[in-house]
Length: 409
Image 1: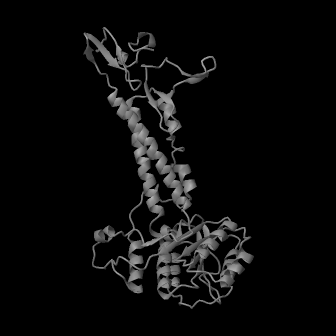
Image 2 (image 1 turned 30 degrees about the vertical axis):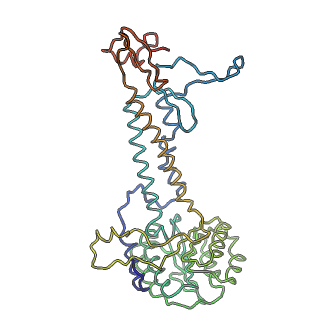
Image 3 (image 1 turned 45 degrees about the vertical axis):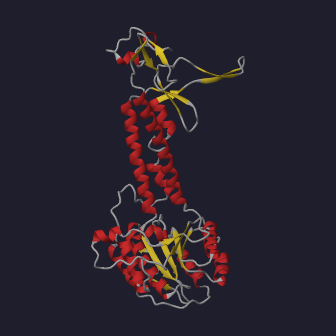
């Protein structure tokens, strides 16, 4: 770890963002986490706790008997089925599935857990770490560098270049507008995404000059200009540093009632009030909020002489940074994390059932000249069973007709 100059900081950003891993196609759709879970979630794939248990067994019946004044459980399944007390609700389930089906569910859950981990990793790395996920097809990005330092100005242009390559390249139309005393527009209106238009936009970014901060109405005018094209689905307001109070007032007066979503992105905000303002502005316009703060005190400098594998080893996927104060938890990440934890809990229960299956294999022994069998997964009590036919284990496990079962029903 070493302190580095602004120039080397830009190099680190470039290397960290450009060295990307190959993600599975299922991981990287540019959609919200809620929509992504509609495609790849537990419920959609019939892998929730209740959905799985409806296929591997049924709930052991319990009811309240008023005469006795207590809950009484049925006895018909005692010893006939493997039984399992669910951790989630404490209820007892009679298991009818074979071990192979349980293994099938365990394998599927393991795969889904890995998919959720990859989606979380994808959401929190590369361009998504800085900009969030672009979910609209026709957009305008408004660039507000008003309070950026010279080094931040270069950092942002590098980061935006990667956003254009990784995300904007996958949508339909886009435009760029730079906030200034006199607005600087890349195009008069959004244009179709092509390889040439992406390259031209990146080249345009690097022709922009660094301008000192001036309190003016430029940010409001830039967003209004973006909204002038009624075909625009959303405006992405990218703000570096903090927003002057005069600009906040104008934005609130002119933009907060916009019917077109204004998605706000905060980069390196120094004041918590800036984060709160941008978050509120996005909420007023039914937009989304995203924030990132680059940590520039200590940066891992990646030298050009390193091999590709060595670069990848040096945490190449993530910038050194964090969420600024007041940002809160990223909802898109939280939704995937929540689904991941649920999948882990379900897998734990399935694995516990499998363990009990192994433990409840037929245990035969001799006690005072009599053979006995341990009731599977139930009370674990030994039941005296004379004249058992061990050549037909299915009968011992309750696979035969209940009237023929050797275990108490």
